[in-house]
Length: 112
Length: 116
Image (tube, rainbow over all chains, first blue to last red; front, side, top):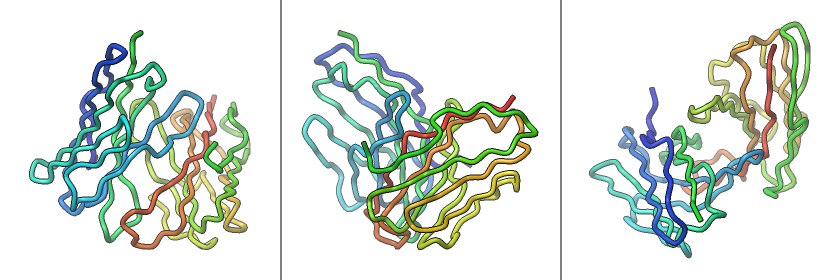
């Protein structure tokens, strides 16, 4: 049973515009959320995270928003750059478990 | 460069072969993980080791056999695999498997496995 879902398998955006990636989860025990970025032929690398006590976390061009009541989080990338073209994975965990549950990923393509 | 290396990067094997995947982490972490990633699917956790002890076996078939001789090295021994085992196998490490809410896992580049 997939507890973390990324319903958009791909996203194409023009350079300089905003990329918005969405993630939904079903487990109400999840309280820590991460985004990983993956280039071809490389492993996923940690990008940004958010704890359930916050509703927003910002790091440079990357901002993650959390809506606990909707069990939804999103990653905003602004402005988008060609180097942002990659697969983005959403992941979640709860306080009582070290295991991460991953979404299937969203492939972002930034057009010049 | 995440501090986690994996060899080989690509592997083609027949169903009767025996091969091993190797992972090494240079981060001083105590926990190591094997994941399987099939195309367009979420990462699936296979095994977890904490301080060389296996703490998780996520109902993985016995044709996959992990080995963790120390906290820096992790192996995945493969024997009589099936074509549906073809996937990207990712190794990861973290400081530990404690209940720290903000534990981050660091991934290696993966081994792309094709079973013929």
